[in-house]
Amino acid sequence: MKQKSLIYNAIFNFLYTGLNLLFPLITAPYVSRVLGASNLGQVNLATTIVSWFILFATYGTATYGVREIARARDDKEKRSTIFSELVVINAMLSFIVLIIYFLAIFNIPNFYNELPLYLIMSSSILLNMFAIDWYFQGIEEYRYITIRSAIFKSISLVCIFLFVSQPSHYVIYGLISVLATSLSGILNYIYSKKSVRMKFRGINPFRHFKGLNVFFFHTLIVSIYTNLDQILLGFFIDTKAVAFMNRSKVLINMAVTVSTAISNVTLPRASYYKDNDEEKFRYLLSAVPNYILWVTIPITVSFIVFSSKIMFILGGSEFLEAGVLLQVMSLTIICSPLSGYLQYQVLVASGKERIGLYVAVITSLISLTLNLILIPKIGILGAGFVQVLSELLAVSIRLYIAKYRLNYREIIFLNKSTITYLCASILMGGVMILISRSIQNIFLSFAVGILLGGIVYIFTLFILREKVTRFLFGKLFYRFKN
Image (cartoon, rainbow, N blue to C red; front, side, top):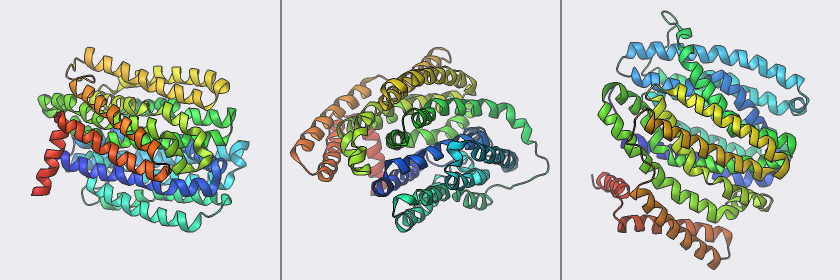
């Protein structure tokens, strides 16, 4: 298969990321005000519960599939065999998990009380068998993913404004959310026929389970320390607290998604280089952290400065009290992408995913213990502090292993460029605070602050002749010129 440009892939992944950012930014203010924090919290809680069932139905194929397809991308027959085997695994597990899900919602009072909502959510488990984004990522088909996402998000956006108009419509909102993310899988399967062949003879799905086990348990463990806090808040506090935590996590994940737009597209390339070109693999390892920090440091400062304004804009006055939580959790914007880079671009690409599993187990156990201690005592802020500590611990352990156990000494997080990003971000933050105090209108001060702050950040990096900035804009100007 023809190898696509990493820059080309990154541009489309940025566009894809932008769509994922734009959708909640448009819908969140409307949905929050129409449904209210409690009803929105019900949907958030149901989504979190269902995501755990989907985790079992997927069973690690989301990451494992990317790596295996990337390794076989030059052999269509081998690629078709792997594709068919993983699709069969997804289909079998989806049906099994769906049966268990129905048994749970009909026998657990908290779920049965919201039966219509949980029945609607079951469709996402059924449609999981068509969730083959891993295939398109493996062959680096980011253009298709971006266009497909734009179509389905546009349709769901129209549906939300047409059919969600009062608090009791939270079930309808849940239905639209599910269909927006799950129906695209059917289109995936149809489009995949252009480059791969589904077959049922000569395949052996069970040979993948040994490899999938590690990926599944890693995803499961990570889900424990990233999602369990919402369930604990739902039981120990209330659904309003769940809504606050969910909204903070959505915003944090949006920022993390932006910062990983470049590093995510390097997973299939890193897997390919690891088997074919060690020198290029090591160069990729050394280059990616600077791109991540180039984005994450200024975004973190922006979140800290504008946390209350962001919460008000997206949720109204009812969400203002969650501003402090967002400030606390914003520190994970730096840690989470670096941890993900170390796990997927380093450990997984090197075939050392089992080490990442052990790290996840340690982190999740500490996270669970701290959540059980802090949530009953200090509530939602306790969950926020635990999230930050968990991510910091995960990235620290993985960095130590990558540098000193696997001997990837090229990986450096703290260097001259990092100091430059930090200084430029502090200057940017000062400008944002000044604008925030000068302009009383929340919407206007936020928009002007982000715009001028971003200009100050980029301009400062240009003045300091920072290499990532010069490279990115050099590429941009070259593309524009030609």
